[in-house]
Image (cartoon, rainbow, N blue to C red; front, side, top):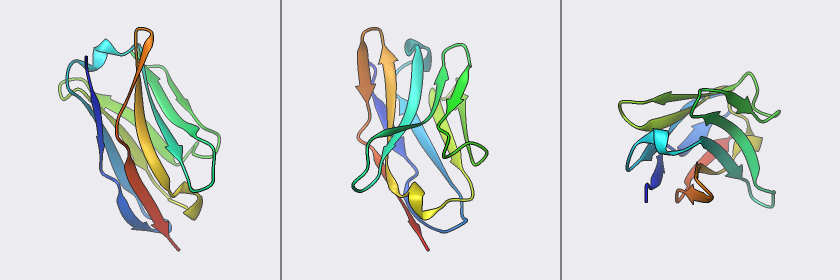
Length: 115
């Protein structure tokens, strides 16, 4: 089974940028859809952004205009470019992939935005 692994999290100042990576152990085309989700302290898990195998993208309302999802097929990696970060973006970010009827989830990467 293809696995996903996130990286790129860390501590960043308010207004700063980070780029997260979600690397697949196999072909990224194995997934019908790959999404970035996040869960902040005391908050529900929410969709940040997703991309389908066909390239259709979707963003959560709170990140539109600030975050961009993209992919590198040769590297089997999905990226999340996060700009103009706010304190509310502090969360553990997870990469989920729809593999048939199974959802594959990475271990998560922590993003902390300091004011």
